[in-house]
Image: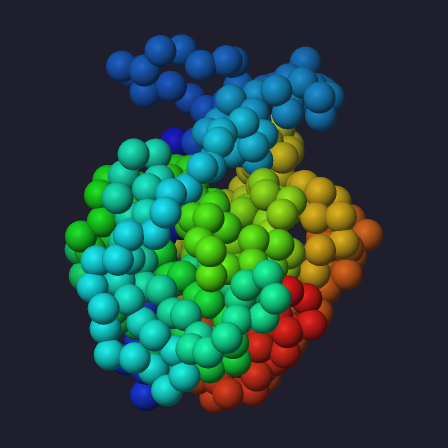
Length: 344
């Protein structure tokens, strides 16, 4: 195992009561030196050796055995379930608010649901699967954080569903992280499937909004499920995995490096290697240049990958702003609302 992420964030969004942290996480590399008690892995690649010269087809076969890979995620089923009301909350100005639950791999996952009041458009309301960033799972509460964000979309006529993810608050399961375990992505895809089953929602008008860790979950979900129409990603952990492994918050004075085969492995494990499968479905990006937690370069990394894959991208840079876009919150929300109005 080699550490991918060792970062702790503390950010306060004025007026929204929002605190987000990013957890330590790790991604396994296919060829590493074994611990004394470990079964022997494949021999590490030598310069000019056979492993170093593995073709992408052979390496993809290795990648596909990792449960976080796009291939493994596509092999799963995401039936979702009917949404079950657990608690009715005080209504918003133009929408209702409820704590609901849905099923994901046999786990009960709680979520905050908002539904516009009034007569829905023909076919049902458009809907947004709302994917929050890292919050310590034991501290997470379904009804807290991101209130201003959901309110903006709900008042604009979108159903929103903010999943807890497994192991958060009183949801079932273990919180094993968003990068080296598939669980949160599975929960996002089952949240989308559960919205499709709701008679108030138009199943053909679903999108995703994601912040920080939720940005990567949203990107994966878009690639795995071709029925998801659009995604707006804020300050996302959306660089390719090989970039995350070397460039995200290395210890002071330490330079992280990867040998060629592990770099290729992490690249092929990353959703960034499968962006052509978006087939033109739109992605919108927002990031502040003074983000101390997730570098602005990560947005540039994904934008470049999208363009190289022949995909369009709508990318906004907020000079001097932070991880939560506190200085441009209303502008960014208005842009996201308009993006979904045009694409859902």
